[in-house]
Image 1 (spheres, one colour):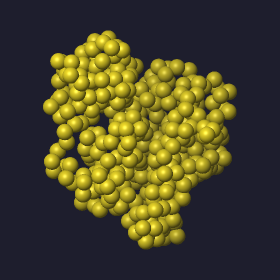
Image 2 (cartoon, rainbow, N blue to C red):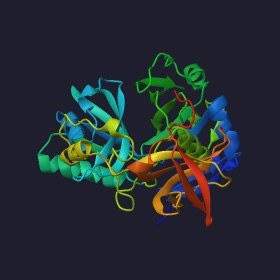
Image 3 (cartoon, helix red, strand yellow):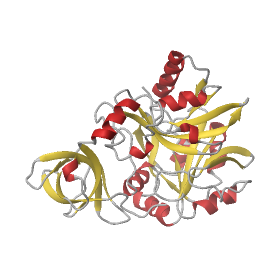
Image 4 (tube, rainbow, N blue to C red):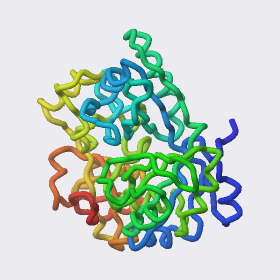
Length: 365
């Protein structure tokens, strides 16, 4: 099956980007170097093409009910222009996906939402929403608009000034997780103060056909998925399909360290199972760690105790460009999860001493 391509595939190629397959998409992994792009975001500003992310639009009299029943957070708290991080869980409370939900202006007097599933999951997520809508006999329209929108992330300490300079309406006063429609080059763009880097910044959802015009307005370092990964690991942020996976690494939000996304006073798929987990506690949890010995932890490497017994697996790891030390994430039994605990990571057959640390590994906004 051919890879899906973002609207700016040719433009990125002309810029000299290197590409990789991710979630069924052919995406730029780096333009100059991961370190150059990473440092631009930490110290100045960079822009990412994240058009591989999905966009599902939900509206209608029962839109709020449908969103509430299929996501773990409390959607009723959202006013127009608000957004929230949430998980999508199955009946057992296992994370199927994580997502950001935006409350758009009402349409025809009905509540309206746009939420962003991860790359390659939009079709399955769309079908899940339709199936449950019909099963519950709810009145809501659910559209998969992934092919209608491009998505860009402008991130870094100088992102606010850059975005505010190119929008007709000021966006500088938006708080974290607030959003509004802002006009860029005459084009209405959903502009949200959200991101995936640990820095301040904005994510813009723009019409697919206007993507090149919008992208060209931002005079800053273009960044690929390589820097996006090192940035989000430093910030202790999860990657769907890697730090959790419903089939290969099934985890609840409590195990994954995102229990704050669970509103147990709401009624959603998986709620009862998660209430039991919350009461009983977890046996394993995701922790951050830093290697004390030389080496770089990678996804799939074994984590052992000091006696050499395997107790967990690395889910994400990198050589941090910011702290200039090898860092990673992984699940371990709760008795090994206390910050300061000494563990070992098996790197290419050799045990490397590691220390459990509180995430994020850096100061974040």
